[in-house]
Image (cartoon, rainbow, N blue to C red):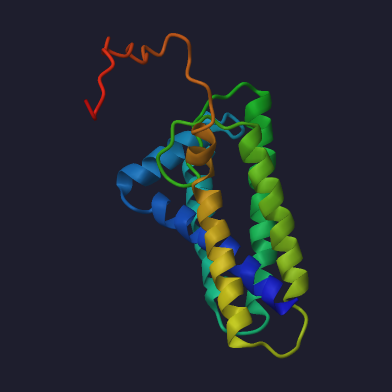
Length: 195
């Protein structure tokens, strides 16, 4: 169970770290995140900036707790992450139900509007965080090989979560009026290479 906890710690830590860093990468990035919070239409406009700042601070706190070597820090970080993810899920569900078409700014600039994929992603991450917190309470010996596999698996899963919008967009059909069309093959006569 300790390897599971470590893998989930890396998964959640990686997701929250990238989310935090993309929101503070510049004034424009934070302003765009604040605008997306406002555009979700789940809070009064005056609360958008304070809530955006609180989200960034909470994401940093999760990262700090998950990186801390003290034993109770990681389960606490995972439980805080679970609470944040649950709140994000509720906010996204309310925004989607109200017809908001605001893009997901979870990991920086995006054109993908909030929708069911974000609800599913956050619900799965919430469950993972709770499971990781419970698994992290166990004790036992750990081996370098197991630690390596858990860390690599967690970071790989974090990357997949972070890239999920881009990956899922690869499988979306092009709109009929996208203007993309494959040109016809040129009229080529058959020739033999060996003639």
